[in-house]
Amino acid sequence: MKKRLLSTIAALAFAAAPAFAADYPSKDIQGIIQWGAGGSTDAVMRAVSPAAEKALGTDIVLTNKTGGVGAIAMKYVNAKKADGYTLLMGAENPQMYKVLDLADIDYNDMIPVSILARGTPIFVARNDAPYNNMQEFLDYAKANPGKVKVGSTGPGGLTSIVMAMVDSQVKLDITSVPYDGDGPALTALQGGAIDVMPSVLGASIEHVKAGRMKVIGLMDETAHPLLPGIDPITKTLPGLEKLLPWGPFFGVFVKAGTPDDVVAKLSAAFNESAQQQSFKDLMDARGFTLMGISGKEAQDFLSEYRSVSSWIVYDAGFGKKSPEEFGIKRPE
Image 1 (tube, rainbow, N blue to C red):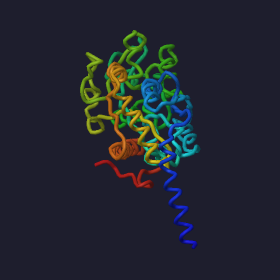
Image 2: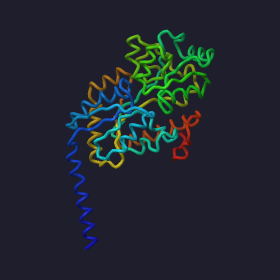
Image 3: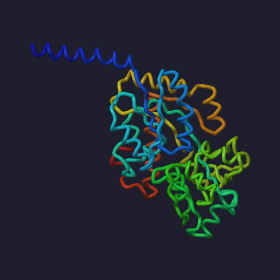
Image 4: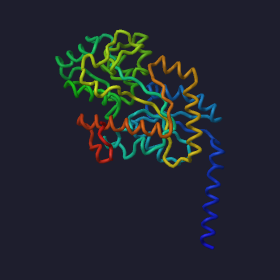
């Protein structure tokens, strides 16, 4: 009798799961953006969400929740129910959280709905800065220790990884100034509060086109069509070739345990949205590379990215824990 009762309960629970997913979504979805308004993550998520809303048949209410190098937003989402009604819309930073001791979870502990796109890092400077390329910047920074103010989005942020890569080749004495995202930092750059900002091309390109700042370096192995005349950083620091290409990525995630059918609906909606011509045009204009991957392909990408980035952070000396503690193998 007891076995029969347990079997009946299990059958009812199994039968109820598809019904729940079939009704999804039955209310608004919350989209929690990890970084501040005006930054690259914010721009990507606000561009991709309208078409995803149409595909899902409901509103996606976007909220910027900053702090802790994005960890506050991740912890917020993971404190919610695993029902697909709270999405984490973030960048690459969580893949270094464990090594930086910012959180005990990263994207590998969540479910990737869609890895939408990736970007290319660049160095931008004040228009009146006394250097116009990476070699001139490095020479100036060496000749003026502690005087160059470089914007930062905190340990594990894009700026810290890029500067760690540079530091692996040449030692610079610069002053790091923290901001909650590259949007506020780029605003500060225009106002003269900082001198240089390692940023993603997509967040800076419109400012560059408008003449509000200048590009002094391209963190890549090859030239970029949107930046004619700008040499890749490997021309100045050839030792970086082994670490490149590297750059930020932007993705949508849900809490582990979210029903498979719900994840499938979300993935289909966001991947479909990423194929809209308006989104493609925006990504092209801002120098982003479209990805639109989900499932195992996304999980494999996340694991490889975590491996490379975590070891860069650790080898640079600002990782608080070894990647080995978490079973993160050094990239081959």
